[in-house]
Length: 296
Image (cartoon, rainbow, N blue to C red; front, top):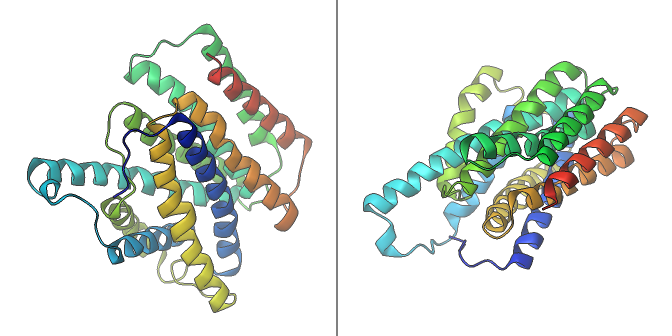
């Protein structure tokens, strides 16, 4: 397993920045798979977690033998279960928002809602004081989200996409708060396997259509699925959880804005999604709100 102790601050900044860019590229890859490969949101998430878990299972374990059983082993698997559940909710909801509201809008709302939930959750659950600046920033972020919701969406069912984006932001915020509160959030085999098991019933409801690739070039689809399960999943979540041990959550929230920026650029340049005034204005308000939250 990757060591999460004694991570330098600069290393933490780079780790979270790399994770955010990887997630943005992963959102674009998932949108392409849902458009050309015939996959649904649950199907993409299942492949994502399945590939990540398989890659980890094929690698030799680096865990000390003394920590594989007993109470430490039980606590580790409990942590893996909670992490996997959070990943399943956040990622499936996010991919659903991309499918139904478009890559740019779905990503912006998911990431924009996360810091709002994190700030409120830190105040209510972790006892952190919610200052006037933070309260004003939350209000500003909500105004930005309202503009994003009102902006024309590239997807077929924007209302459902927006709701799923908010759910995805809440799931990601829950993972961040748990890690900040002392939870052992690790992107390991147990977490990805749990996420896969949580999504299998939803995938079963969809049937083979939406879970098995039915279109596009088989080689391109296979490469895309392999990339999605490794870089934006296996590596990115390890980078993110590693960075959270050294970087304050508000700073991490600013760095994670690299994800919607990356996804929005890819969506406009390569996927033909519209760049509207409402999208720009809402994004600017979200950037201003999170920048205010990040100021000490």
